[in-house]
Structure formats: C-alpha cells, structure tokens
Length: 201
Image 1 (tube, rainbow, N blue to C red):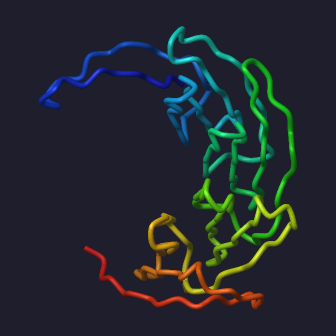
Image 2: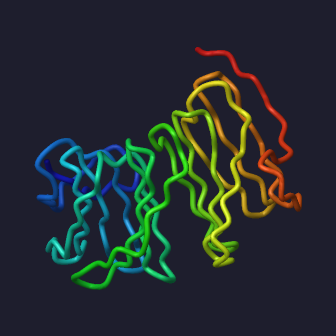
C-alpha cells in the first residue's frame, strides 16, 4: 500500500498530491515524518518497517518485524526508531542513510503494544498495552530500568508526555485519563497518579 504526500493550501481547503511512496504490501498502520532528516517512516500489516527520502521519494531501507506494528516513535538526535507490535515487543533500530541495525528488543507486556511515547529530554520511552499497563523504559540512564505503571482497567489507547510539567498522560478503554507525575522519585512499580473518568460519547 502507498503512503501519500500532499501540499495543503493556505486556507486548508485544498490538498494537492505530490508523491506516492510504494512502502508496503498491505495496509499502512503507522507513519511519521522526520523534518530534520527529510525522512518518511512507516509500518504496515505486512510486518514491514520502511523509511523513504521525502525529497527524492526513494526507499532508503526496511526491516521485518516479528508481528504487526502498532506503535512508532523516533529519536532525531541518535536516529533510533522504536517499534511496538501486537506481540507485546518493542524493537529498537539504529537508522543510517540506507541501512539499519537491530539494537535490542524489550519484552515486558503480556498483551500487544497499543501506544508509544518518547521523551527525548529524559530519554525515556513509554509503552502502553492491551494488558492495561504502561511501562517506562529508562533508555538514557543505560541502567536497563523498566517500571510498570498500573492505573487502567482496560487497554491503554493513547499516551502523551507534557515536558514542561513532566507529566505522562494516558487514556484507556475504561474511559479513564490518568495523569502520572514523573517527578516523583520512586523505585516501587506503582507510581503516583490521579485518574479522571470520562464518559463515552
């Protein structure tokens, strides 16, 4: 399947096609544009991760994942890509201009990864899962620390990190929004948080 690039008009009322990226053999599941490198990163149901040059449209490389990808994040400074998949695994690849290297894989979830969020300042990766948990992976500390955060009664659907307040925000299929205070120094698996319940529309 294709990834399509468009130019939006200034009033946002018109989209003009620019490029087609022949990226995958089946439905595209995730896509990221890296402005600093002019790269388009994508994953698909064909279990392929691919990246293209947005200037030339040329495919730069690819990698086959162990399961269908369901989360995608990228660190511009180190050129590491994080891919979460339905098996519950997170794969870390180091990207070069035309090749990639497998760095490591994280296995901590008992369900599929449903969301990823990267904090480039603290160099921490957060993964949410259908097992109702969020795991904080301390990558920058190089200690291999992984802390499990429990605050949902259903699958975690999305993650967002507010750097100015150092708060992680997660929402789940249970209708709850959890705000995690990441300034709290804890070694325990359960970190302090507060939960806001929202009703389905």
